[in-house]
Length: 461
Image (cartoon, rainbow, N blue to C red; front, side):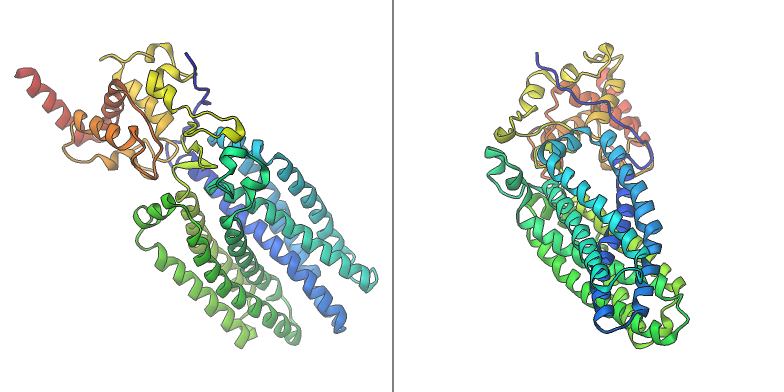
């Protein structure tokens, strides 16, 4: 019998492994997008400063660059490996799918990242020490290499939603996987966001200038950059939504909080108001206020957007063939990948998983709840908390007077045939469905009492 080589599950009982990855990734996005936007902004500003003989603007580049060395390149270099570590243990097969598809793309991105890091040091420390033409070239190379890293990563992130071209599943090919409508829509959205963050974070540096004329000049440039980027980002977001697959649209309509659209609109309006204020009244550009705006956009704008992006990818985690619970959910002939659903349907989960205690491979009355817990860990815990608190607690989906038979019937009807678009196909057999139902009911005391009463009544009859 074929065994399914799922790795042991990383179980974090509070927020869940996926949300830990999300926390790290969201902070990293703030750092990385700011650095890429700043790189392109520096290229333009350096050229502008040299052309119009405004060396004072180079001082802003120098100070902003020094700030980014810590803000983006030190902290970003910590959270970047943090993403790799956390995703490797939270979604090993998802990461494996990305590496097998894009290993040379990632290698290319790392080469350009090294050039980017060297470039920011040269741009900062050679300002005023080399001729104008050389400094401008450094700024342009720095900006282009930074944006190239963005382009590569966005293509990989888009593949996590769905492959660029439908024929990829049959023929394979990195370009078929990489380039698609979602790639460029997401690139446009992220490009606009990175300039917005460049303008906001730049205010932290510009707010420290004492020269009011210089502060006014910089405030105007940052404000216009922020206004145009924010408005463009709102338009790019609408384009992005139009490129999403059917499952993503279902999640957007049914699984995200009702306040989500209003929250994003509020963040956009607040950001625009901030930029208009600093444009009209440069004295309002204060480092502390700019810092508060940075945190506000992170918490109320970037975090909800990243959560939504991760949520609408469900039930898949990569390429629409690796489920969020790591099971291979469909054939991909172009990559030589076979679906594991038929094996599970034929033999059951517990008999085909590698890391299962022998005492739990066969379910009986003595181990039913423990077997159900093991099934929940492997099939549900990537998205649902198995504790009484946490993110999307599993017990909240079965409140009240449901019996074990009710829950088992629901599990098989909703999941065994893949009928729920935003959840993986999980072909439980009768015994496994009953075991998982018995465990779920232990999470809800009221339901457990009702089940016990129902079992007593049946026994008396």
